[in-house]
Amino acid sequence: MLLDRYRESIDELFKKVRDTQTENIIKSGEIVAESVANGGCIFLSSICHSMEMDSIYRGGGPIFYKHFSYDLKIENDARARDNSDLGHDAQGAAARYALTQSNFRPGDVLFLSSVSGRTKKIVDLAYEAVQLGIKVIAFTSMEYAAQVDPVHPSGKKLYEIATVTIDNCAPAAEAMIDVPGIEAKFGAASGIASDYIMWSITSVAVEKLLEKGITPGILKSANFPGGMEYNKTVVEPNYEKFGW
Image (cartoon, rainbow, N blue to C red; front, top):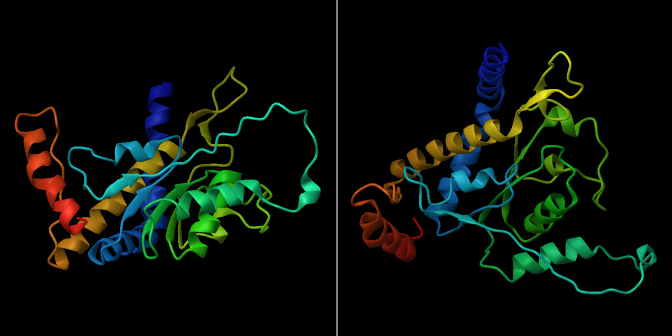
């Protein structure tokens, strides 16, 4: 059954993540804990088709994860013209502007993801963040990234810029399973792997904070009796005061 093949593929994917990425997962969790303990903020942005939303304000998760995104809207209906001779990187400028106008400080942590490692907007954001002293934790597929060329003006891909890079172990072109009668492979790997990695990092960060004598605010489910009241009267005020 395709169901059985899919489950076997996921088991193998998770095992590969455990076998090859545990060191970087622990390092990332330590970076998060250190930043939080020092008053820093932790931002999640564009992790594999919005997987970051599974970690933000979720029952059982920490309050200190916050979403970050930006969008520069330009209205201009003039005819298309080549402006490459002007020698500027508009997307890089937009990323830099977004970061400097947001609530970022050196020592904060920004999570980003590009499965191919070359997505222009993501690489722009990582590049500009590192220049500002922000620590970037990146998720990518190293197998995929090794087979594509960079598009960023620096000539670098995401893993060459980030403070820590974690391989989500997705195959090149993403999908895992050959299915007879279908040309494309089936079963995207990066999303479920990224979620697994993100919660693994979180477990390390929570444990490291506890070792530092800091009890991070862990949210309760808002739909369970008493959950919303607890979040609003205990967790949120504590976060506003201490950052955790």
